[in-house]
Image: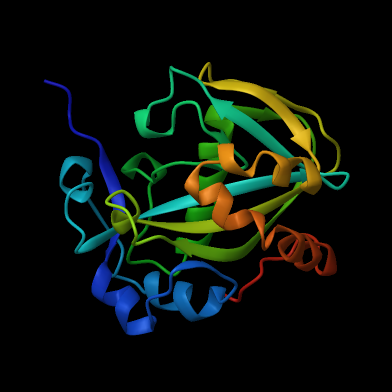
Length: 218
């Protein structure tokens, strides 16, 4: 019998102590410095995490930008998350698993986490150019059953060029789109991408102000 997938979670009470928010927030330090305290994150079976709102699954969500445009794609029928099939996205994301060797009780957690983000992106697309990685915000959506058990950490990758190819078959209609073009297809965007669309210009401005540096001191 195949071993069940283990996913990284934090107890919802930790988020509540920091202050529950709805939608997108730029307050990176306020939350990450609490969520990633040694001993707070843990792994649990995904089947339990998906149905227990007492826990939040930590999901890095990476937006890629080049030349004033943003990588966008439609999730095809082969997508692992069937609830997102047919929706357009501007983010590459996924669960963090024990394979990432997360040292939950070590001060080196930050490096391991960013390594996990790189792995997650590399599983879905092939970025054939240099990039900076900046944590620009967090995303929480308690309005749906799915949102209640997930918490997004939003990354902005600023690419040196638009040299990106897909790896996963579930990625279709991949292209770099302008802000105006994305607003034109807003109704087709998955929920997290819609939450990120309005603050996208400000995310980009912050990324350009300090290229190559993380948004927070976490």
